[in-house]
Length: 105
Image 1 (cartoon, rainbow, N blue to C red):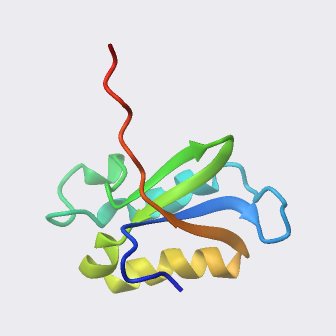
Image 2: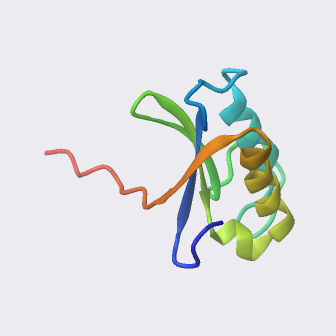
């Protein structure tokens, strides 16, 4: 269950048993499926970029997908798909806030 105050949910490529989730491109695949769900809806060519609401990344060497809770507000079924993917594959899920990189000096 995701708390109502959470802004971002991190689906991690580590199972509850501590094993690395396979296939290795799972995060890119999940984010690719979610690419059509974006602010303003799908636009021509939007399928070739990730949605700002579902972004694959690597955090501390672990593949993750950062799912923004705005997706839940815009398209509940897409949100449920992401959360059910994590649950069905026994993946670790955490809540946090992704901070921007500090400005370079």
